[in-house]
Image 1 (cartoon, chains in turn purple, green, cyan, blue):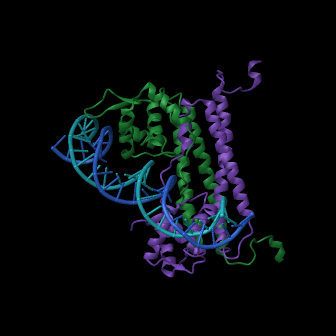
Image 2: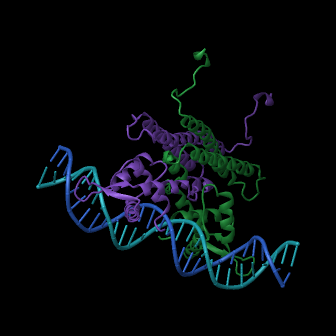
Image 3: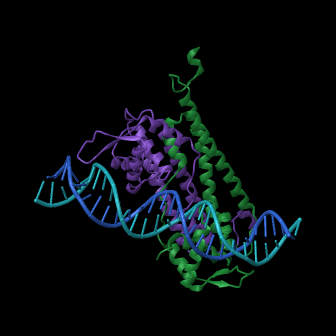
Length: 193
Length: 193
DNA sequence: AATATCATGTAACATGTTACATGATTGG
DNA sequence: CCAATCATGTAACATGTTACATGATATT
């Protein structure tokens, strides 16, 4: 039961696409799933050992001395379907950015501007990475999985664009906060005629 | 140094708005910051004890027996500014939804549809909660903080709307995946005339 | 030969949740 | 008086990262 849930799903899922070593597993998760998921060696190796013990994966021929390529077994594929069917469990939210902005009064508008600008730049960088993924020529072996991957890429793109739109709005709001004027909105000029 | 970082920031930040008990602290974080942050009692009470030991907060008059209202001290306010100025550290991404969709091939289009529909409904629910926050009459004591809070609310709204837009797109894509037809797009009807 | 990368694994540490134990106050 | 809520705190557990130890293979 221990070492169960999410890591198990990620490892089995990746091996359902193609067999690979523990090291390659980490790389694959970082490169392709990296925007939505992460695993460290400290998780992957114990998870692989446990999955092997339970017969969900097996060591296939090793390419080099000391390295083993892991492949998913039939019962492993069944287990994966079971795991994927379980209700989505999300981690409690912990946005360092939002925490800082929430208490932004203590920081002042200028420091908040920097934070927002940083978030905007990050989002822009992510957009570029998603575009790169879209432009990659589809590999033969992963053709069946690709439509689903693009679903997640699309989610990332929507989120990134939303961040950029929000950032522009927030920057304007912070500017408003900074200048200590009475009238909140300029309104029509004619009103002073 | 232990028990430092993010929880300390959240607790000091909340107390910078107004003094309160540990219990109220948790409620405040849940209600107002809940969409972006979370803390449990198991974090809050040890953190308060540590902050008190270091002189960043003090116990003010208690309303009832056994309960203590905590207030931020001058050095606590300074410490908060220091903490807020530290670089944003974000938790590694772990989206259970994206993990499932990524391996959606194993689930099939129908199950994926359910997942996406669930995410869409969640986003809609969040939008309603944000609207409620906006409509709350601003309290006197929190007036100075409010503009910053609204910044985070706006971020939540943008994110939720992006989720809804993505979900609609994803549902359409899943529909396309399901029907096993040759032509990817129906095209103009006239072509068959 | 030296360096970079691939590869496996473990131990120590950091963080965070849940469940429990305990009791006060308030409202019906 | 009884239940719900307010309130504090701890211990056990779950999870996850980082740093380290170790060595093979490929590249220059």
